[in-house]
Amino acid sequence: MGWISCSCTGFSKKKKKMIMNQNPPERVKSTSERLMKIDSPQRVKAASENGKSDNIAAQTFAFRELAAASKNFRAECLLGEGGFGKVYKGYLESTNQVVAIKQLNRNGLQGNREFLVEVLMLSLLHHPNLVKLIGYCADGDQRLLVYEYMPLGSLDDHLHDISPDKKVLDWNTRMKIAAGAAKGLEYLHDKASPPVIYRDLKCSNILLGKGYHPKLSDFGLAKLGPVGENSHVSTRVMGTYGYCAPEYAMTGQLTLKSDVYSFGVVLLEIITGRKAIDESKSKAEQNLVAWARPLFKDRRKFTRMADPMLQDQYPRRGLFQALAVAAMCVQEQPNMRPGIADVVTALSYLASQKYDPIAQPNQSSRAAPGTPPRAKRGIGVQR
Image (cartoon, rainbow, N blue to C red):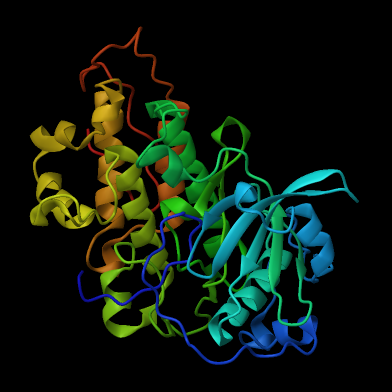
């Protein structure tokens, strides 16, 4: 995958290399007017949970109000930094609310486009597994987004380079997070009309609330999916290295199955504790999917793929089933990948099977719970 040129937009404090246009900032005339020109206007109608959310309903903020909320964007309030800007913790006195404030870089058209797309998408899309947009600011050349505050940070914070104050995620919590993230993606693919391709699914874009409730965030790269007889959307290759589906990286042809591939990479990270790309490892192990593919072919090697931080505290059959789902999601041929609804069915079952390390120590496959109900396309959950 070394040939993929992708950008990064996550909240990670570690900056990554990006592709960005270095044009002068574009002036926003009317936010609502510009929002409707970001993607085919006649197709911009998204379904909320009750299918009736088709109006822009985000609150507008003055820059000075957000500056005051974040103590003038002090370093002590910094939550993270991504490709398009920095995210700060803030407090809105007017609503007595703790929020996350994303200040976009003022460095060109791409960042401005991301701002407009995100306001549009999160104003129209509403689901328990999508982060809530509270409002935005478009004063002069300042572009800021205000989200609900997610107290536990990102999934990336809890899987990789874990700080001493964070506990290791147990098996049950990992499956809960995986199932919740899949439900958010299912909403975008199957409930929104037209469907929405997220295009930037990765661990740093999955934020965690109380009880490790996961929500997808950062919709600046999202695209409306194909409708009618169209099989794909052609677009410039954007995303994060290690998560981009191979066919999208090579051709720029974006489909819903491109997101499914990215989800498969995230699921592998959740199971193995490894990063999608880890240059600190040997060359053969730097790319997570390339490392995993040979192991998928031999069930006897599945236990090697479990995160060592789990200390063997996981259901053996549950591990096999989760790896089977991940393996199908990262198939090279997009038509061989399952639909996200089938992934939700499988992972919801796994999340419902609570593992007790005391009652079920080193559980063998014969003693493990039964297999989940078969989905429409029959995800290959191994027995």
